[in-house]
Image (cartoon, rainbow, N blue to C red; front, side, top):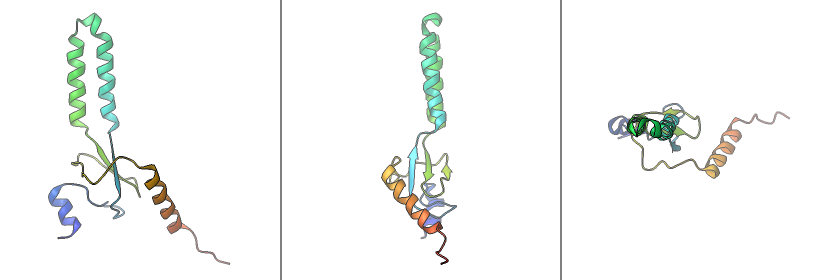
Length: 115
């Protein structure tokens, strides 16, 4: 079974559909951070609303955290994959690995010496 079949059957990102790379990193979706903002605003308004705003803020935080989970991003072409289960092989962004990948990409794209 090739990786295309395995990826479509398990619904987990295994390789990039654009550049065929298998190097990915995972990060939080920025919309999840919006939930933290809602929670903070509701905490600030809790004194005047007698705690009712905390319930609304907690609901919005949980809903945004569930709705917008982590996203998977390709190191090579930066393609973003939303709403896929996180592959346990993909870790958080690694600066050393990204620098190494960037050097590899630049070496591939260099023009040959014409002299």
